[in-house]
Amino acid sequence: MGALDGKVVLVTGGGNGIGRDAALIAAREGAKVVVNDLGGGERGGDEGSPGPAQAVVNEIKAQGGEAVANSESVTSMRSAKGMFEQAMDTFGGLHAVVNPAGILRDAMFHKLPDEDWEVVLDVHLRGAYNVCRATIEHFRDQQDGAYVLFTSTSGLYGNIGQTNYAAAKMGVVGLSRVLAMEGANRNVRSNVIAPTAWTRLIATIPIKDEARAAQLEVIKQALRPEQPARLAVALCAAKDVTGQIFGARAEELQLYNQPRPIQTLIAKDAWSVGTILSEVFPAMKDNFTSLDRAPPSTPQTASA
Image 1 (tube, rainbow, N blue to C red):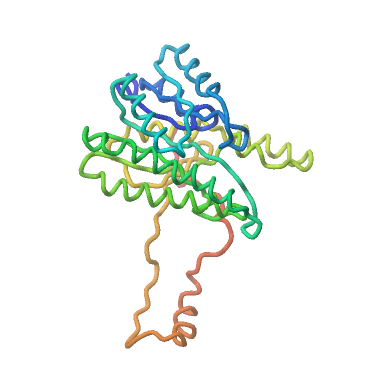
Image 2: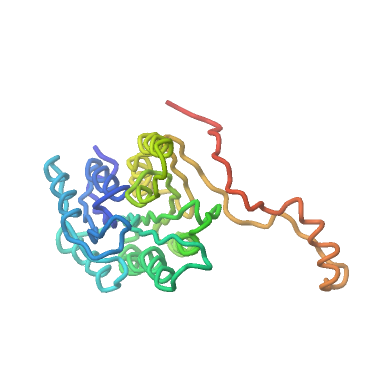
């Protein structure tokens, strides 16, 4: 018995990386899978082919599973609706959406071309909106459905050279949170994962010397895409987990906190610009979040 027996799952970006492993694992857990992948180039988002999605479908079928390929783009609402219709027409249902489809267009903000801002938000944020909006009414009507969306530590912590990516990924966090709140009374769940994994996007990082090449090879072996993919599939099956932000880094699974006030100062009368400068900021300074990226967390508990 698999965790997803009798379920149908749509996986975007399913031809490579986390999406590919999520599709394969979901099938092993009993799901029928719609494998979507545009089949673009290494940086993603380029015009591609149906080859990558079909290759994963062939692998699933060779292992005795059921799957169908889709090579449309998540940036099109018409295409997103077509993915849903394909699931319904082919398998008679849909119960979960896993949406790791993504691209990178890195640049310092003052050098960022407008088109690189637009395409990254189009794929990550509009893409997440499209696949969720195309399926939400079905999930609400059947009172069952799970969204597994993807954020990034580039948004949660920040990362130089990725303003477009960070902005899109933090938008996905807000989208998922409200989907979870609105879907709670209809058993529609939504969670996000901030993965740390070696994918073809990470592989585009320039290698300047042999030492860097050796370092990246170690990272590649330790941070495999199957690790966050297992978490994604588990979230498809979990009936009582929603509205959360998870991290997956090697065999370390993380639960992130979510923004809440950590300090409040109340004026006796009213704050002025002067008293904000002289009293509020100095009183809050010790609680300011630094510009450093957060260090890797240390597991507090572990089990075999």
